Image (cartoon, rainbow over all chains, first blue to last red; front, side, top):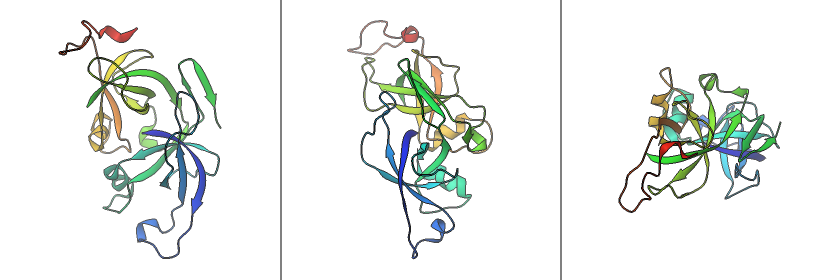
Length: 96
Length: 99
């Protein structure tokens, strides 16, 4: 799993049913050592009610996504938690 | 599956209920000679690991099998607390909790 920050949202009227009634968020991965953004952003289906600016816990694994849906779906990356704080190498980041 | 060092913790009160009560630790993946390799990640602590300790992790869907219950949305779990590592080319006795 990775830590990420929600930096945006995606809308689409024509889409696979798996994305209907779901929020698709743009997530920038964070480096837990510095709290800074690191690497390319990704899209993730939200399962926790996260919003822009939230720091989130992201699972990037297809079978886990299918497990959340209880069905085989074309979804790989999902948000499974909203982070309150994290600490690394003695530094604490309170993020929500 | 790979070696890793515990370098931090994550607190997330609002999360999937199947992750409730599961410790979330930040781990730095390691090569067999205990040198850092790749980016830190967040793992479910299924081996009572603590900060600074050397562990080994399972990634992908199989990580969910380390957690109680039929299914849990995770792709990385700590499944062992390493006492020692011996590998060709590795520093002798590199394990031992890594403190």
